Amino acid sequence: FSTSHIHRQSQKDSLNVLGTTYESDEWTNATPRILSLVGRDLHKNPNHPIGILRSLIENRFQGLGYTMYGDLKPNVSVKENFDVLGFPADHVGRSKSDTYYLNKDHLLRTHTSAHEHECFISCQTPGYFICGDVYRRDEIDRTHYPVFHQMEGARVWKRDDFKNEEELLAKIQSDIDAIPKTDLIVEDVGYDPIENPKQDFMTTKEVDLVSQHLKRTIEVLVDVVFNEAKKAAKLAGSTEEYLNEPLKIRWVEAYFPWTAPSWEIEVWWKGEWLECCGCGNVRKLVLDNSNLDNSIAWAFGIGLDRIAMLLFGIPDIRLFWSLDERFLSQFKQNQISIFKPYSKYPGSVRDISFWLPQNDDGKFLKLHENDLMEIVRENSGDLVESVKLVDEFVHPKTGKHSQTYRVNFQSMDRNITNEEVNVMNDKTRDELVAKFGVQLR
Ligand code: FA5
Ligand code: MG
Image 1: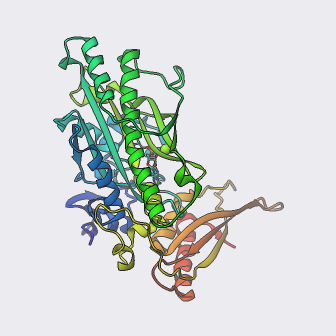
Image 2: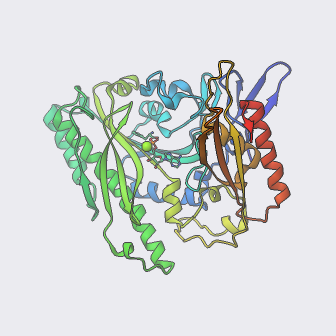
Image 3: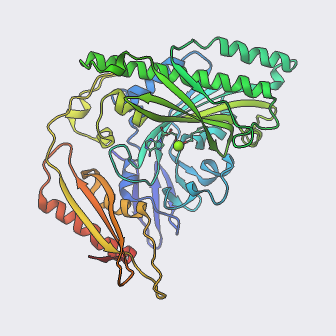
């Protein structure tokens, strides 16, 4: 299934990812399990929920001037993922605890924005969409998985295509007028001139129109997807109240290094605000780097997995990666259908308690939660449903710091035995001692 694997060479280790070899170094932290998911390409499978959602969105925007990119590889350079987008050197996103590095110069993309630069250069239409798998070191629970999917969108207007500013503005206005109206209830805050300022190279009127075009476009996308979700739920027999209420969204201000001003859209869904998508007016730096000087543009990035979960009624994000026919056979091209759970197998819980390590001066060292998550994931794979820090205290006499993590084991397709869980859990405990010097309690 997978096209990625680890080669042992005579001297150094190297990784092969989708045909490219990377010499390992002190930055390498992409694990064999993560690399085994590279190339699964759920977004390219027309009969998989992620692929179905992707088509639903792309079909809606077909013929409207967007080039669709779906084949860009997830192994990219640090330059593409961070540098060209203006991420500051000390941005947390760059840290090894958040990102899977292949080596110091290459990584598994953390967002589809990693391709904005190349797509702004290569794209021959006013806009583009990019769909792909993205990788982040993260916690483990029902809605978090180290691989998920994003869809990027962007749209450009070149000032040089117009005789004057007035013509440019008229064109953007007519592009806005061409976007169909939705019946969403919209709450918009605009942008704070200090906290979320516009860029000097754009006039106030340009920001106003580009932002309107951006927001109306995302609203159309959200309208299509969430109305499909309602239809599917009704068809499956649900009579819940929210299915008959108009859809409510709000724009909240946000920050991204390569857009200004920036926002996130949140959708009111079953009594909660759901964060779906980040966006903004593209910064001049990115445009200039992409042969688009004297242009203005917007970009957005939407997460597909959580939306696919509610669209298809999928209770656990791990199911997307299932190879079980009882899962896969339920989904057909261009159809939104509610997932019918097959029998839930009994789960198993283990607590891991330890004292944090101390250095020679008696100072306590920290254990990054993502490092613990990674060890659990490597040893237990998709048999682990969630990991939570459930207790933390300082011993009143010794001053030692204690932590307890609770690991929930649960298979979605079979029974797991106690022995099997013990083996996995013992390995995790041993590795926590070996790698981080914790003292098990
Ligand atoms: C980004 O990734 C930006 N690249 C988005 C963007 C693009 C901004 C273009 C401006 C211009 P963020 O990290 O917030 O932003 O992720 C975007 C969306 O991905 C989120 O709104 C959410 O829907 C989804 N997402 C983020 N983290 C996860 C996760 N761990 N699991 C599932 N979905 C996630
Ligand atoms: Mg966010």
